[in-house]
Length: 344
Image (cartoon, rainbow, N blue to C red; front, side):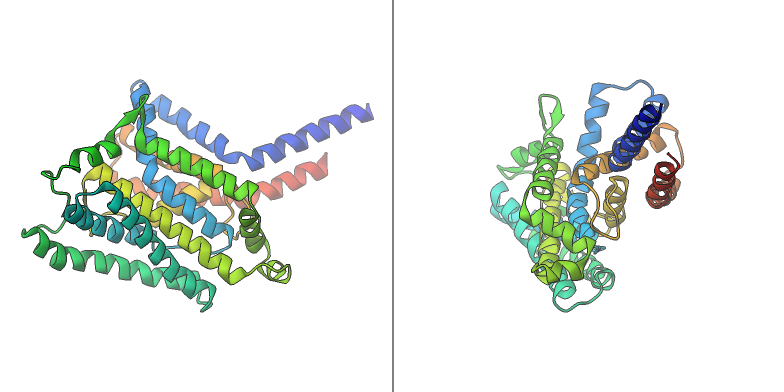
């Protein structure tokens, strides 16, 4: 009898631990079920579209996830997306080269991320203040450059960065953003590949272990010989590179970038994908795989709002409420599990 009780307790403990570790899958399945019930018949193409619409936020979210794992935050990624995508359009129009545009987007993203990282890691400024400031700086530059430099280059009066359709690389570039491989959107395949890469980095490399160590206990990590400042610089730089990749995909998908609206609230969407994915905002806990599910969950919430014919103006309010609820569950979950295991 005792053995059975012990076994029952163990299985309950294992189940509650699994639910805690992979809560992002449960959240995703629940949200997807609501979507299936509210939409007028699910189609394969509709499901694949979730990947397409999650690509930009998901890739930015992976960078945000690494930053959050070290106990920091980056509020500048939405504005960085606007500036980087705008400059990428200008560069593409000048060079007519997809590869040059990609290299530029990644390098410029790295520079932006590095600037944030140096101020946080070595100057020891709070990440919240640094990235709040760079959020304003990047957005301001995106609008200024569009109004003055791009207008002079394009010779028009547009307030939006637009790719020149007559260029020989225009169609292949636009095809990259909107094409499919075996019915899966190319941008979705890129999202899955980048997620797999970062799952590997965080779980199977020394660098990944150091990221978790810094987030769990920065002083302890420093005493163990980890250069905490350098680690913080590196995660911000990686976050910038991923935002650069997202900017490249944004341009490929839309063939344009609006400096006033592109990336608006994307820092919040990325943080939401991170939180929905089960990554602790205080650092040291969570899985990169969760960010993929978090980003897709957020995309589906959008689709549910459309399917229910709700006013689009209430969209962000619903997302904000869900974000608060998920954080409440994140905080309360371990406490409830602790009580359950104690009880059994």
